[in-house]
Image 1 (cartoon, rainbow, N blue to C red):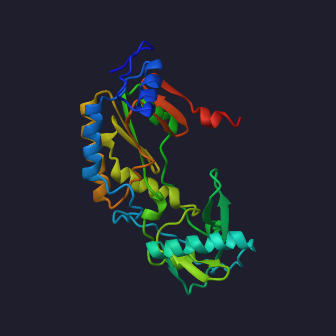
Image 2: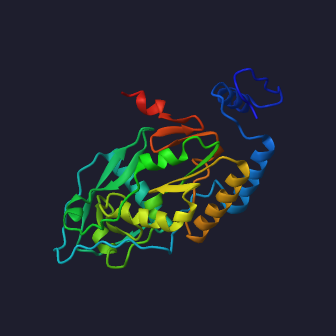
Image 3: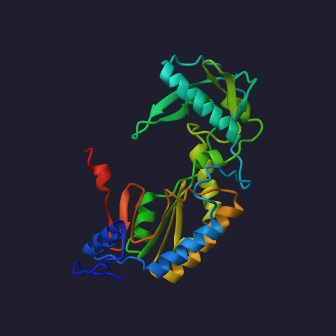
Length: 292
């Protein structure tokens, strides 16, 4: 373990690993040993799929239902877009078709697509479901208080933050809900989701229901879930391996997939719910403060 700022780093370490250790040491934070890292790598290989695999899971633990009562079907025209955006839209539609996330539709509902530019310059495929949401009955299922979770995990020595790939899209829709999600794509026609899309007002409540089935109350001293943000925080490495193993097995049982590349496994410090968490406590994430 490394503590303090007076640290010697072996020349055999990669520059990235050496920089990581020096940075942690300057904060007085312990880093995992190479033996511990090997144990974690072996656990990941055993319990998580190939990191290059992009196939989304599909849980059988819960379905999302859209209850619009006796509302009449809402049909909206698509929004005009540039040729560049239309091409991007078509590419993402074909990708979702291949993945079994959407299918062609004959629904009498239709909502418009919106392409939202992300921070890296790519586009997120979104559907404007505001009119659908206006006639939907939304479950009053509660979300956890973020500050309560942060208070319980701060000061942990070993922290894992698991990234659930395309989280909402891993929940199937009830059969009656599928036609309500229909959307029009210029040049391609009408499609509908068979998985829960982003943008539905009841989506967060449904995912939290799933998260609460996954992370049960008896796990709470060490594991928490706020929507698709799953975190494990322990004081000892042995406890961390124990809980990480249990939760990864439950994730597999639920039919969900985790993005290994985006997950942070057994780290002394992680970004979680917009803040940096380590054994010294919680502090604002500089990346979020910078724009301010």
